[in-house]
Image (cartoon, rainbow, N blue to C red; front, side, top):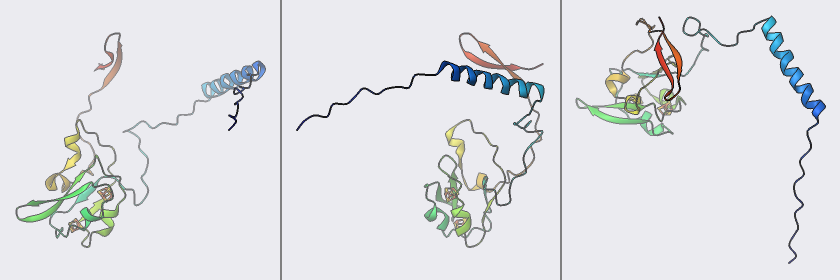
Length: 168
Ligand code: SF4
Ligand code: SF4
């Protein structure tokens, strides 16, 4: 069988005039926003967007309502929901490291023991914290943050990279 000779791929030569035009366009865009600034980010948390109805944030378990039927754990496509026994009662635990926020568990619960909240701005310092046992899962996280905010600023450290220092 004859081997098919492949022609070397030809790359189109850049048109210097076109490239210059692109640069001019970029400069014009920069000047436009310099003259008329248009902020596209929010000053979070002082500003935040209104979440749409049915937004699927963190899920809350209502322990007292749950009947331990295990349907939520069975339907979960991400293996994020498991059951554990607490004081003789079966209750779900959730691993937010796996959850894809599909809402199947909430929809299937026959007694409305799971509810979606609008909480989306949470951070965890390690993967263990992503697992909510029934007590943690039972807590209401949909409350405004009232703690003291520590202001910091970023500094570039030649050896360590970026580090954050108190902003006085
Ligand atoms: S929202 Fe979806 S992925 Fe998350 S625990 Fe429920 S069923 Fe599983
Ligand atoms: S589906 Fe509802 S009642 Fe059943 S175990 Fe899950 S949370 Fe409890």
